[in-house]
Length: 364
Image (cartoon, rainbow, N blue to C red):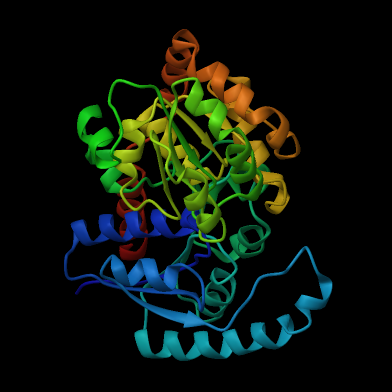
């Protein structure tokens, strides 16, 4: 009899895309496996998961807002309501296993599952474990990790290192440079800078590129600029009547973006780091300073210490990011060195490892 697996979490592409990679690996093992996602209403998983062909239930839950305490007044009520919704979902779906992939919507789902003695599993993508996973770890059956050295957060006998699941389109698909350049209506002969602030965009990165765009173009650098929704209208106006620049709020076909790029500017979420290792691209990280437990800085610094990436602090982005990016774009030797170093961190079969071990443990 095929398993029924509930996958909980979301909020950003860093949680959603690996969850979809895991679901794909589970389906490869058994096409009849029943998989249901649970996410937060209004978040990007409610769009991305159905696009990938899976069903999803949305919870009326919000995360803690660090910028404004008054916005958290409704949080207790929404959390209680989400627990009631989760009970209904679990009663109707009757999962054999529940996997939490991060994001605040995973907490009520795994708490209810644990209270009902349903086997629960966690995936911790970052080098510094999130509070939600730390709270859930004691009653979890297994904790899959994307980084080493997490024994200080989790019981050592429950840790199973898999690496971070990377989208199959990025692992398996390698467009050539000409194809990739054509996709963005760019030249394959010019140095290309890929700029991305994560699935939701990044204000500091966007402002730095906006201010320095003419410097980049005058130096002969082409730009692929993923802005996030909020900055997209400004970026569209900024690149109007300029050649050698492509902009979009979100790039679905990231395999083409990576193939076209010589250098990348990026936030340092765990999944982005994993993708950049797989494609072996020289990267200049700008860690998001408000990430929980400052995990993006920890992710980036692990690579910087190994001379596998460069780093610009968020508060220095507007003054120095474009200058550093120009220096790297014009230094082929540094690009080769960074590419080789970051490529040594690549894990291409993380989703398969995780799916295999999950099924094995549930079936025992």
